[in-house]
Image 1 (cartoon, chains in turn purple, blue):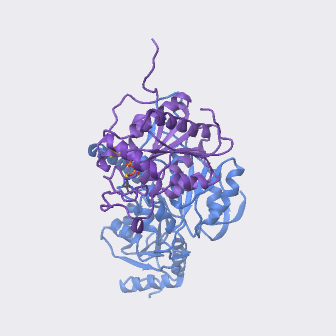
Image 2 (cartoon, protein in one colour):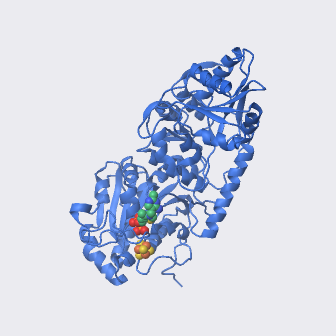
Length: 251
Length: 331
Ligand SMILES: Cc1ncc(C[n+]2csc(CCOP(=O)(O)OP(=O)(O)O)c2C)c(N)n1
Ligand code: SF4
């Protein structure tokens, strides 16, 4: 009998704690699949954030270092500089990477730190109960923007990928979504390229994964997916944003 | 052994290299920048890592990452920068990751100034970070940062270190490990905290260090550390010339604090003067140690002002005469 579908070896057989319709679990599964396919689970170290993303360490079977809100890129730097032979990745939410941890991510990218960052953008603070994030859309109602985000007071949605792409230190930057099988396949390719960029020592890589937070968007899961496709993807264009010369195209 | 003339900052940096420091992460701030400057050339010479971070926050988390993989790692800063590191220090304690942090204290609060000061005793000893934690705090004999003094390096002697069987490295050949800094379940977090408290009690049993200097039967006990301790040694010597019986207890560990010896010596002398380059921070620990058994006086200067031997001796003589202590010259 031919196995056509199975749980990745690097993913524990454990129910996810996430809300129905949340894509955190899906994103983590893709990371586990790529870790399996590249046979790097023995030399990979994950760096955990603070936010709903925090549970990743319970699900992916690699060594993990859990740290403080927003500081993963600095922790990853400390690890990678200590043990250049390891594969180091961070997994961070939008509050974590694009608000409190902005300095750390910009400088890790600009140093060309040879690490991979996976950035779950759900345009809101999940774990703390739905406050506005720098990535929240204009007009988006949240617990701390009850009348909708306004440019005059809260400024513009934060385009981290485009900002990091400007830096000469970044090698591979992509934005993906997981709302249909075709996009999931592309997302997995991007995650794979990010790891390959690191394995081939090409420098900094980051994949932003647009993800629904049905609970805090106050939408049923399917409507949340629709809202993501109609609104989030309109503000945040998916695709490869930067592929530095030398970054492998082998997928 | 060879004596060489070195700035305190450089001596610290060289000592770190000789003690096997693998990595250094830091952000420039006076009066400790020479540590970074020295290590930026010296560590790469040894095949080790130097990296200037974008902030003290980033530096302390780079330390966290390096410690998590079992490396010997150093960072250094001064008051304002240590304030930024406090969150990371709390996380290091929570995750039980070892690291060495140099705090070359300067005048505060705010930007304060870059003059010598002991304004950061509370910051170092009580910890500005969150949670129920302690860290071992060592204080020097004399001024470390900018002063040039002859230095002799001895070969560092270590007991064999325990294996770092907790460090992460990639799980090849073993079950995976993780370094964790939280326990969401209340019962579990209380257990974690109790285990940390056990460690702090062990520090209090095993790590206390101090120096006693001066008269074996003092009429007044002087307490001070760092620059102040140097000055107080001169006060003890000058006092002896005037017929005053003075002794100094110099804590080498500020945490764990040498409370027992402090109390014993204080009770023997009958009175204490604590001298600091701030407005009374270690004073609280001295008073706790002495438990109200004898009066504890205080003399402090701040902002980069240093208590002189003359002024301190005058304070000492005032206390002795106020308390009616007779001495050989009959003041
Ligand atoms: C220093 C600090 N500030 C604030 C918090 C509280 N906090 C926890 S998670 C979080 C934001 C989570 O949002 P995000 O990073 O977008 O991740 P998500 O939960 O949406 O996956 C905040 C503000 C904290 N833990 N530490
Ligand atoms: S709160 Fe949002 S991000 Fe967190 S698990 Fe629920 S849906 Fe996912």
